[in-house]
Image (cartoon, rainbow, N blue to C red; front, side):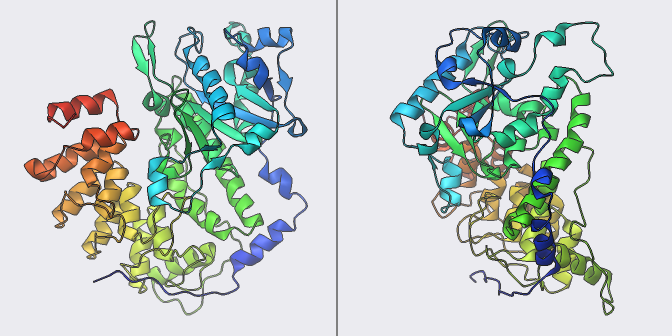
Length: 507
């Protein structure tokens, strides 16, 4: 039986009235702008292109090569990267050479930066990045070793009660990202003999600070960013599901206290973006971010923001706990009923699934929400294709209590484009794959494009998902295209290649 599309409903809501009051507030701009405690020092692109070695902030300042960026000057580009040396970010100039070559390639050979493959296939309305804006104005580059004080961090007698310039610069990262038109993740393969390891996009994505910088971008007005893997391999990352950074709280920190310090900064960034969406009456983006808070805050000791829309009072006729819960949820999300949909074709059940709140899902179902209702349109802010069910959404974001609940309610695992099994593989969700198989779903399920769940997992280097599919399917799983999918997308890690070769995958 084909899945039903939800009905529609419109009404003036407290959400709309509150958004109007925010937009009319005199301090709207100040609340949307992160505080900058240290100036945004940048290097003009022409200076960067002529570099043959990397000097620290203080040396560049003495040489007069740093410029305090102002919006009237042109565009800023924030470069996030992983240090490949102990006391120096790039002792052999390997990373920065790739950055120079990539800039040359983008500005002289490219007209657009293409979307990543996942976004292009799942979210057809997403668009590549037109490079005209980058070429039209002077570009100024923010890079931590250039832009943040370095030498004072080696002064042993530094007064610890007072924020140093370096501390102030680090605390200003959300502001630097917010002011940057472009955000680059510089992740070429670098074989470091001194460190005894190979640095890749995977190692960049494992670092807490790198994840945090990417999260700041994803919580800024323009959430897309650019992944540089080589001088010619440049990709636009436009959806959370395609992001290799994921939750900063789950990253590795050299100093564990940094994790605690970043939790309130993440909450502030989330609040700013929510208010930004409301002031612009972008209720769809508001609902998506409100729901994704749990994902952004994983690994932090922080609770998602609630009760953003003031003035809620419980209806007099509410008689059950589930009705109370649903009434409050509809109020905060601006829905008139459990079966209403917004302009993006998403119903309350879909946002509850995105939030990972299994109790809320149960309450919505008790109030007669449609278990198998699917979305009408794709949603690039969540990286979800059209015709996605609550089960598929839950599986892709590792909300496994929700997966368990929906399966117990007999939710259908199929999908018009991407079945729940494939979405679980894309989300590296081994537990959901196991639960889906236990409920009778085939581990060899394919999407509408003919790619299997195993191939989807390999395409993104999702080892846990790939191994679970093999455990469930055994010899019935066709591994022949796994290596191809991994190498043509971004899953081709050494670990995955070794794993697939051990299975005698077709080379």
